[in-house]
Length: 168
Image 1: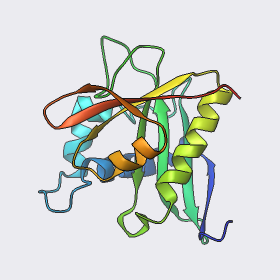
Image 2: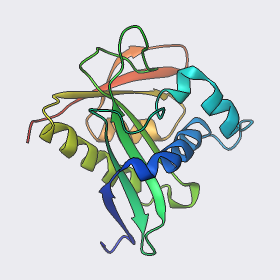
Image 3: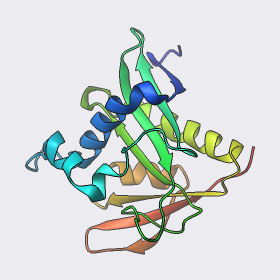
């Protein structure tokens, strides 16, 4: 446990429900917007496939936990195919990153620590890039840019970003 009040551990199959919670949190990043229910998020194939069957072969992930070992955030990587792409799909060999932090822990270094850990895991697993999609208005976009993600494609409201990672 660091002085920050949280620590990281590898995500396991037991974390599937929490990853789904974090997917819902990521979808609902803007408290000023009407919130999308868990049932809606997981009932939509385009978003549900980020967590369906967690973990699949090749999935990587980490969970942040507080001093009481309660999960407070998660990050995970998953490969998608051109036939079933994610929102930030770049190529079949570039895993897409998903990240969520419970609201009361946002802005306290949890997301940055999770991103650093995910880059480490990805590099150790032989990946040289990872990608994501983020709405431009989401303040997490600045975090991704600070952590080395660059925009490779832009839509009306969101960007697809890639980070080049070094193999460990």
